[in-house]
Length: 227
Image (tube, rainbow, N blue to C red; front, side):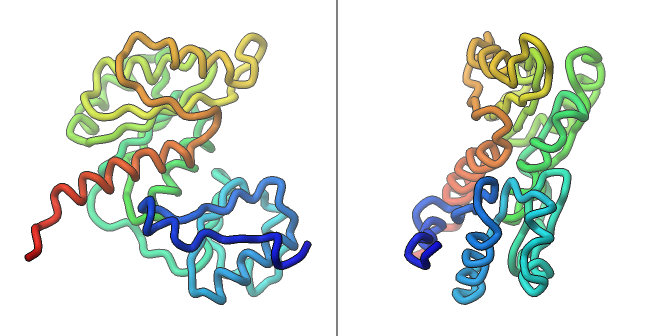
């Protein structure tokens, strides 16, 4: 690996409203160490996704100790990150506990950018009452991220009951004809509930970024005018 092999995008937040995330899967420990070294050199923070524990513990101690790591979502915050301020504007729902890792990736991404999330887990349609009894908690929020595998019915149900933006994440949970999430993806794409935004399979990070785009626009629209 040569230093010229790595080109960090330090201007992404100015362009898009969120930083470049470091997708750790497929990167060597040497790559990650160099990326973290450059971030520290520039006094920058980083969101690390798909960071396996064995790779985390292979990093130098001085870098590893600066990472706020969550093993469930395999996400890490490098640097100084402020905790979420204010109440949640995004609900993150998942159908079953097998979907929690992807849901937590979305929650952690939102937390990295200072947004709290309303977490409502294990509310799949096999026990529909689990969802309906909690709809009042999210009715006034602008965005709901729904995470589901198998037949991925949850996004369609939420899409028919929740008035805000619904961002759906199909997961690879399931067996047989679930086909690693392909059935869930196709089911959401074919949903009868109109206006659902669909992410790639297991892409909780992408769902959070879609929510951030909406929240950033809302923040600009509600910001006081300056002369």
